Image 1: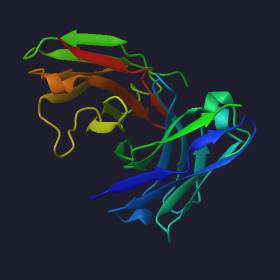
Image 2: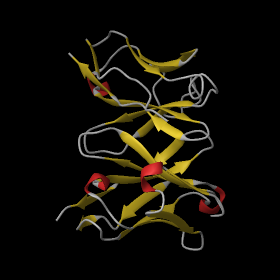
Image 3: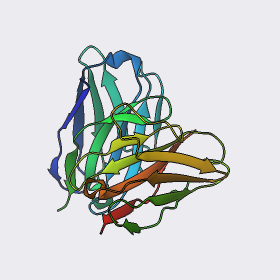
Amino acid sequence: QVQLVESGGGVVQPGRSLRLSCAASGFTVSRYGMHWVRQAPGKGLAWVAVISYDGTKKYYEDSVKGRFTISRDNSKNTLYLQMNSLRAEDTAVYYCAKDSMSYFDYWGQGTLVTVSS
Amino acid sequence: QSALTQPASVSGSPGQSITISCTGTSSDIGAYNYVSWYQQYPGKAPKLMIYEVSHRPSGVSNRFSGSKSGNTASLTISGLQAEDEADYYCSSYTSSVIFGGGTKLTVL
């Protein structure tokens, strides 16, 4: 069965960096685009970034452009999100989600990132 | 792009039907049939309930149905059950991905 397992969250000071990982299994990872979606405490879902199946195309939500980088290693079935210059407003649970062309058919359990001094 | 508009909360009694609306624009919901709905329990990951306006993934109860008219999509849950109490989010996936603000469903 499809499994997405995020890791790498934690407490980090403003301005610092953090890298999230999402280990995927149960499907041919190299055939699918992958997304990061976040959810601030008590708030709704917000799309962050997407990467194409082969890693050649990447798109970002405006507030993270230039600070976050999405990448993937298909040989390791793993998705990454490098987050630099973190701000308090980046505090959220970060989910990785599998792309199915026009929707997200599987989600990970999420990893919490807290940006605080 | 702005978030899609959903009511903050809806409620219904067991056995009743409820509908959650999701209003966008002619650039998102009105443009394509790429509307999906997600159910989320507190502290849990979202789960796909409806995709491409009205299609149900395998394993999702047929009590859940979706539709669209113009720039507004709707999720209807019939035969309401206690286990349906959760947050529901709509999403439009076109040139970008946007979500609604979420609707908290309370089963009375």
